[in-house]
Image (cartoon, rainbow, N blue to C red; front, side, top):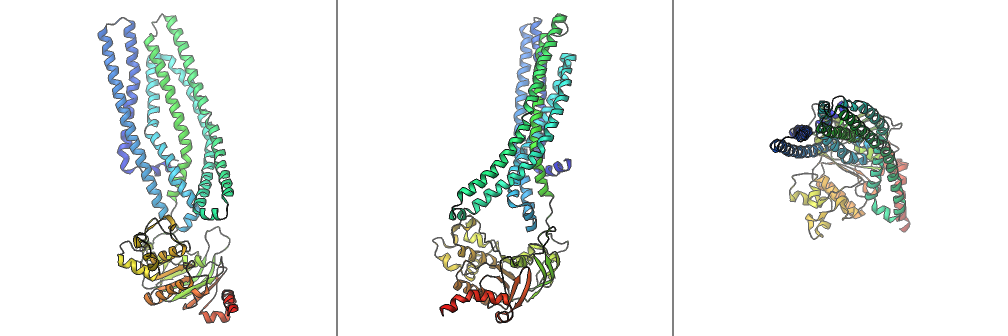
Amino acid sequence: MFRMFKKLFRSVREYKKESLFSPFFMIGEVAMECLIPLFTARLINSIQTGSDMQDIMHYAWILIGMALLSMTCGMLSGWFAATASAGFSKNLRHDLYDRVKDFSFANIDDFSSSSLVTRLTTDVANVQMAYMMVIRIAVRAPMMLIFSIIMAVNLGGNLAFTFVAVIPILGCGLLMIARKALPVFRAVFKKYDKLNESVEENVRGMRVVKSFVREDYEKQKFAIAAGNVKKDFTKAEKILAFNNPLMLFAIDFCMLVIPFFAARLIVSSGGSSMMIGNLSSLMTYSMQILMSLMMLSMIFVMFTFSIESARRITEVIDTESTIKNPENPVTEVKDGSIDFENVDFKYSEGAQKFALSDINLHIASGQTVGIIGGTGSSKTTLIQLIPRLYDVTDGTVRVGGIDVRDYDLKTLRHEVSVVLQKNVLFSGTIKDNVRWGKEDATDEEIYEACRLAQADEYIQSFPDKYDKYIEQGGANVSGGQKQRLCIARALIAKPKILILDDSTSAVDTKTDALIRKAFAEEIPDTTKIIIAQRVASVEDADMIIVMDNGTISDTGTHEELLERSPIYREVYESQTKGGEEDA
């Protein structure tokens, strides 16, 4: 646990000064609050012994000064604590986000996106609250407890030892509560992840939900997830609810025992052993001690709740990306040639089946290569190894004659542009989205990339043209328009290798043909890999790869595969049968 908190405290950074000032001023506030009852006792005793008004005013001014100083210290401590805790959470979110950005696809698969969102939001908020308590209340409560006990012993003598009987009982009770509550909190955060996953899935797939009239089903599914969270939280709260009765028992015990024995002492000694002012201040110190214990129990509850959040955050921080830059990376890709040598791949070490097996392939620089295969034949998995989105399990993938694991990641991915199967556009203008491929691209470069991707014609039809605002996820453009913008975004980087993962499925066959023609004429030196479901999209390729169940079934030209590949011939005939019957 110490190692975990040590890692989290690294995110304090520039807020160390505020983190130190907050407890410093808190000590000042506590000192004044503990001295006020002492001078109040002296004031009461002074009145009891018949002092004049001048002595009474002397104590009054001292008490007013202490109260003002206590208030000032409290305000400054609160201000510094708020600044430090908010800054700490800002840095912690930044550190978490930086680590997540460096994650490989395999790391993200392990955590899930919904779990990462929960850790960046709910968990960080819990740790922020715990940190504020550490630098403020966690300083105030122990200091108040120690100072009050010292002053209580000074004023009440043996009566102060009443607290010695209460504190062990309270400590044992709190420890038992923690041991019961912590496993429940650990379980509830996993269910939180499931709840967020349900929300994320429904919002993203809202069109599908409405199209199939599945609102009631999704509401029911969400209600079950929310109910599971509520059930665990209720269980945890029931355990923590024992905290209040335990504290009230301690308070009531002290409030009954101390006045009883103090009154007997005053009566039996005729006021010589203890004066009324001392009893009054002793009662004040008793309340301060018990309130300090109450604060400690609140801190205890918050820590019990936040320890699991802290563990989940450090789990992300401790996770190293499965894909890293080598010590002396290669920073130049010579050409667009690609070689697969005895490649095997599976998504995790525990997976029983390989997604790719015995892949041997050579693609010359500048070639146009088509990939055909049924659903689940691992076409996408194959091309994801080229820009090193995943690392091979066995074998070697080379680009430009060099193992992809020897390249600088930014260099490799700049030269290998991938238009993935799921097209993603970001909120912003068309120009902003295309510039994702090249940050400093000029307007002319954007126009040229969109012209090659056959996007310029429909962009010109928009009133704002290239300044048209794209909603989040490209919700205000069609699927085909979105695909062409994603292709333009990949082209503007002028890569040595361009990979289209079924990225023209939403465009008509004429536009598809125009895109392929533009590629052949305008970027002949770029290696082009096209994954497609339509044979028409790849039949003009220099080489076509037929995938089947994670292996390469055959390679060749369109004519060669029609002759010798049953899989390719079946796909081709199923897509052209309708046309032949019409003829």
